[in-house]
Image 1: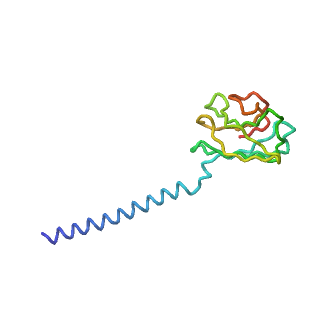
Image 2: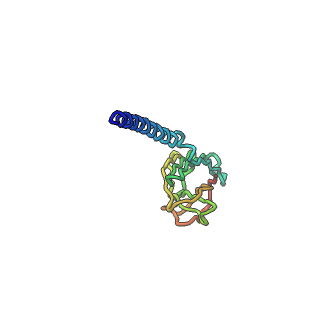
Image 3: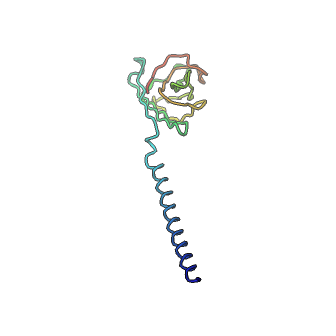
Length: 150
């Protein structure tokens, strides 16, 4: 009977070892799947000029809905007048009003690249817009939208 117990215990530990290896392999595979293509979860939008003064400008937004943050990059954008700022907005079918994603400061060279986070969670980002608002930004869009895209 002792020999039978030893064989059963040996089989148990052997099977347990295989299950531990399989579990580790599955965990590694799940991690690889989650990290394999992070860009597939991001929305990339190119914004088009809505005003002839900004027709040579390029604006791209990369939005990560899971992390509720993004990056906006502007190129060839003329600066605003004194007392004004560019402001980024996010709209979606589940958000009745545009949500501010902050002021976008553009340098003398017409370039800007900033990370942003909206003032509150976005359920579904559908469109991005940049408007001209008073210096420091506004709680709701009031100025002209100069760039728009989805």
